[in-house]
Image (cartoon, rainbow, N blue to C red; front, side, top):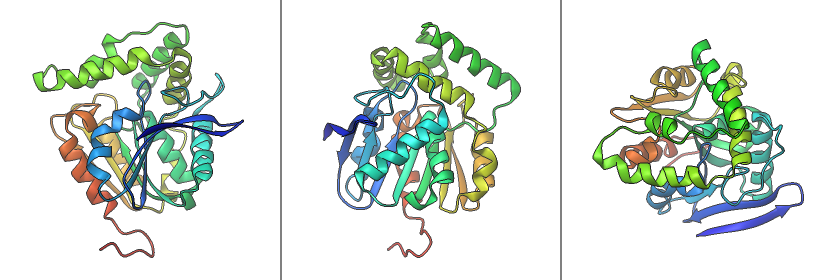
Length: 269
């Protein structure tokens, strides 16, 4: 079920795709996407969990944040949304920019996060990668929107990926340019913001990426997992940035295993 909620004057509207019952699993997509980008995970996991995929601010049906918003503002947005939805501690998974938001949430508000999964996240980019992504953010802020380049990074030329690639292209074309620019700048500048505090994350952490992802690299996933006391890294071979869409079967198995990891004081049957 997809719906639009009006939360408050401050938060505005929230786009939600929800299915299933059980312990809450909240999903946050990446820049330029929307909650529908979690479709394979919603379908697979709703049999055991209450799966709640959110439209990020300025994407889908969710109200934007101010133009000057940075990663902490997105983390605060998620904190306020979870309080408004009255979900209690949640299982929290994010992809790309969503992974940055979820990592920050696990650091800043550990009482609200039972488990955290960071899919195709970025962590302490090297100088060249950081300069490149900040340059892209500056162009996007000026209204320069290049659809071809991100798709080439995110997908291979394999025939089986082309339908998903076309769907992702449609989502990118539909995104609000200002919401996209605001989120992309926060994404570009946020890779190190919470990195030194990953040792404070006391819940099970999964860092997952594709072996062919040039920007959210397996080395980054390993570093995130090593930095967190209860971290685990997983690389999906032969996949790139949109691994949750191009290889949902393996990603869903990994998420099921992560969701079965006991948290403090809990026994999972």
